[in-house]
Image (cartoon, rainbow over all chains, first blue to last red; front, side, top):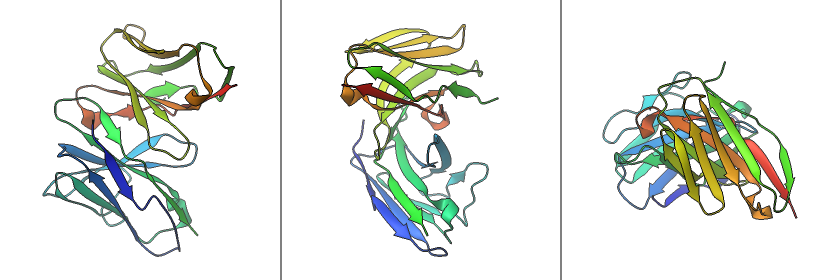
Length: 114
Length: 111
């Protein structure tokens, strides 16, 4: 497994602004992912953060809205751009290892957009 | 039809009860099956992980997979108030890149 931390843990933002969420892992991991969990719903994969190259986005998510960086094997950021109240959600990062077929999750970032 | 179906509950049981949580799925390619526990205002925590059909036991928790019926279960014995959480099933065909989650079942264990 891995110890995963996220910053900030929560934030309240104004419409039209952007927020960058950081994900730090205590060991090098093969895969890093970003999810959104809207109130009362399950997890929706936003994108896979690829080290040294552009992220791979799922259907319905675009780079202009959710730019992602992954400069090394232990760190990634997700930016939620030009926010609207519909972006209010929990944003979670997770990691996976090439030797395993599961993922481990960070504590999440609770975002409220006014 | 969703690829993974999970009864959202809520499910409320008295302390000490046996709890059964279930998911059904439609994709016969799924080979790896997981249960996550998510406490309020926390990220999902991996609880059980099984491969293919069969049972796996860990303390008070037992995970069962029946691939012929496309049905997985999580049993909690001697349930405790600390088990109160949302339980998410997840599954993948071949790698951690391809997890598909159920919608989660909210469980409350009453003291």
